[in-house]
Length: 313
Image 1 (cartoon, rainbow, N blue to C red):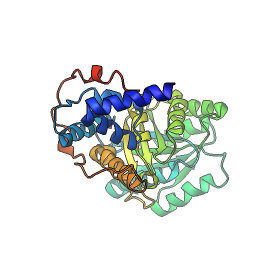
Image 2: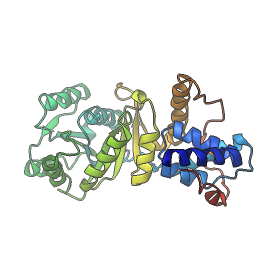
Image 3: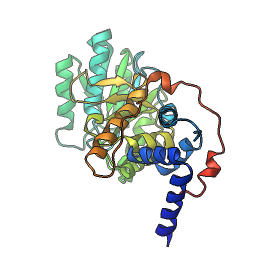
Image 4: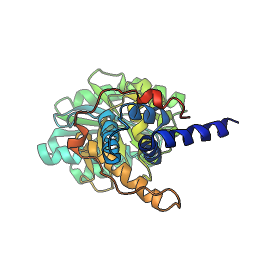
């Protein structure tokens, strides 16, 4: 009965507000969360032409993505990089270290690993350190990390590699929390692979939030088939994206997220279009993709569209 009622509601919305119904369909193809879709569509004017309605929708989406306004590592600091196993922590650290070393010199960078759980984990970072000409310190517990950070106090940038763990491993998460609470000067960045399922992204953010997250590194964007999940969860958690990685090259394949706001949505649209074209009956005709200027355009205030959507879903 519920399914029949929902179908009737959707048919009614398509009949009464076809432009809004089309935007809803497109946002859902992007993989955007239902609640976020509603909040976006509630701001749209159904009297506008279809292209303008869609342009405003994706501009609203881009505007809501929490983004660090600057390159957070550009001026140095102490950063602990945490995240699930296989999220790309060590490679992201290598990219950040290489960028900083090219700009300030290898002597300005300090690398630390606290990962004593995975076989070969330390060797991975040690290999990167040798390539960059940056010694890697090993700190197995909170006391050793405190002493190591004191030794590296003269470094402009210190990056701490941590053990990857399941969001359900409470014991290891608590151990990581002990490390990141060590000093208020340590900022914690969560690596989030864009190719994870939405539920897994939500679980990771919820679990690692106990560490006191200062931002996120969105990794493996090049491997994702949809970006709707990662965008929806960043917005819901109000977790700022600091960097985006989209390949294995060091240091080329990382960029500050501040330069990628429109790129997030543009790539999400492109991926959705590729997916839609592969499925009969799910076409996504060409419409404008977001630009930086579109994301900053003045949009109309909240309209009565919210009431018009009351029957949908």
